[in-house]
Image (cartoon, rainbow over all chains, first blue to last red; front, side):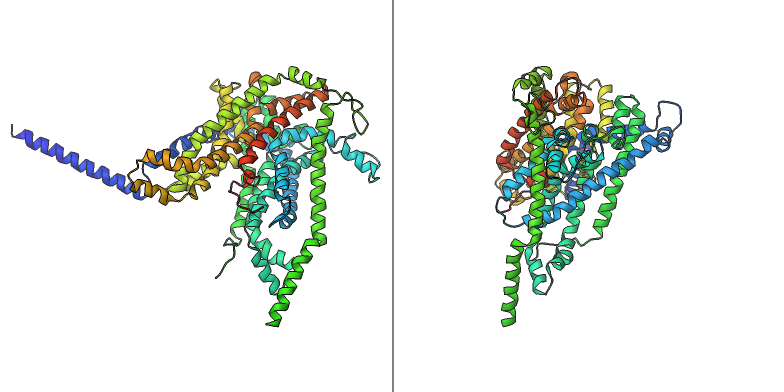
Length: 313
Length: 291
């Protein structure tokens, strides 16, 4: 009988101790920012794990399991030795790099002119949104007619006597690049405009007071302040251009010079039903693209990244 | 003193010059060239859709609307439009339900692993959709979801959820946390803070995110292309197939379908632009520019 109170007391004490430690654990976690609110992020995290990270890992694993018994690296060896497949890397760069560079470089002067108060700024921004929201498929469809040998573009050029014969702009690399400029330039411009609007014009005025010419103001003041933003703009436009797919098939020559990585991956998967090799091409695409992005971001991290808003001090 | 005045005058003169400099003219000419081409593209589709025949002339030889009827029947556009709307609306609702709470956590809390979480939301947007789309489609087909409406919705959610998180996080960050603290001081429970304090404050952000996701989902091609079956194609994908298999049907019918697609996007765009600014569509930052 006497053992009961002690036992219950011991139980109560251990309960108390457990409660204390639980409280203190919860408290300690809360101090590190882990409280009940964190549970709100769990659905989002699980979603990304289930539908992005898991498929990605599945794809990587699949890429090491060739359909034939060519071994662990079989698909990778096939990709790098088959010239038709290996050339897709070069083809993708030949399309994506010029398109991304033109988009970013062309958006700088327009953003310089359009910053501050310009009449009709909202109207211009609204028109620029149209090609972004129409999407690549529709732009490619329209360009097929517009740039074709009987299209208005060639007719006007012949009409003003600039060319004698229609220029071939469809079913080759040019059509694809033009379609990437039409959908990508507005995107790059609106991004650059938002970065350039964050630079205080007082900085250039200060440079001008110190005797800097207009070119010097741009080259020595505005450009260095804009460069980090330009790096991000380049990355995002490059990503868009690098994953070119519908316009490469519709406007380009998907068996020849616009046989890009994404076309090769889709063809391997849905025409040859070789999902392991298609996964291999996907993995290579992602790795190459992320490498370029990482290089640009590495370069960006060496740039000036302080305030560009100006002010005292 | 006089020197300063002279300098100021010079700066002013420079500003005035900048308004009419040849540089400005060149930029405007280039911009107009871009716009002309853009309108040329859209107008060619429009003209072709109403053409009886259009071969080697400036304009079609005659006008007709019969190809709209052909397109509507041949491409089963009524069904395609319904599927497109079903997919887009479901994606918007689900991505907000999953994404907004996660954005709240990222905006308000500092915790170990936050950077990794942020990266896991950034990657689906940075990586080309076709790269994760192929393994994802393979998985969905294994789960017998490939080709179904649910499969298409799941695939379209992959970029939508991270997008909502990235749009909503800065929006929630700019809401003063002191308001929540004050509500708690007044005795509000956590759920009361969410429904009665934060809820009304985040509605503009939710609306903006919803419209941006809607525009994106209607235009998103790759993932739907990889996962859709015969009855579950959205408008973009069936337009792609129509162009891809051109020759079977008159090009005017394809153009008519493209015009119907343009009109759909345009309606959504007009609604969207009432609530979000054009710059917001790409920069995900609230635009406070004064124009």
